[in-house]
Image (tube, rainbow, N blue to C red; front, side, top):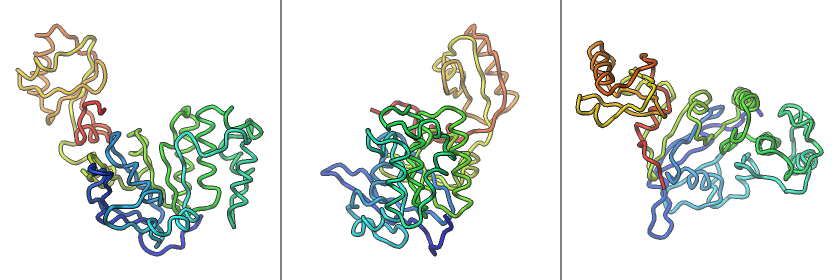
Length: 308
């Protein structure tokens, strides 16, 4: 998997894409270097899937340019796809073919493929090697899709939701494999809705929303932007956020009965929070000062409302 390409493996320059009167991507630029994991994040409909499809040569930009290993995917799509790996979410195989047959078939298309049996062992597919694709569990299908993406030893691989449907053990195995792929010089473009996955794996993160890049940087840079610490608290019954705003407390719900205060932690702020909880008759079961994580940053940037 060693890298031999000089310069950015992927370079996106001022790329825009329109579908009729709808502008899905609005002039974005970013690049990925050799041996780097770049996470492309965004809410549903943000434009990240369209961006990936343009990088893979399945869509053509309306304007701007993309370079993949020195090739233009808009005009050299087939050549690009010969050099990259693509992991499709929940797919990528024929329904009636077995795991071993699919890996051997894909290996035959490549000059120097990985050994299919090695990949079967590496990804824990020994027990289903003779099972057809349609009879695999969702997690097993994902592991096979990952094996198909890397069997040709690509220098650049696109991983779309690589651990979707996997159990905790399989997820950790995939994370470890991605670390080894990066160490071997492979460049990985990762799309995921799991913020802990992006924070753990990515060297660089690009957040897209409404077709534009709204934030980018290393995970450390993003989580330390703005206030790096916050007060988090849990309650035994719902806390009235609107009522708290009357006491100048900017409270955000992170999940049921879990909240954060969107302000710098101070003793005075904790006292006001305790007074407001007492006024509401709500018992605080846990309170602490925590470091913001990538999920909090992502929600702060893209909003907390559901997207249609």
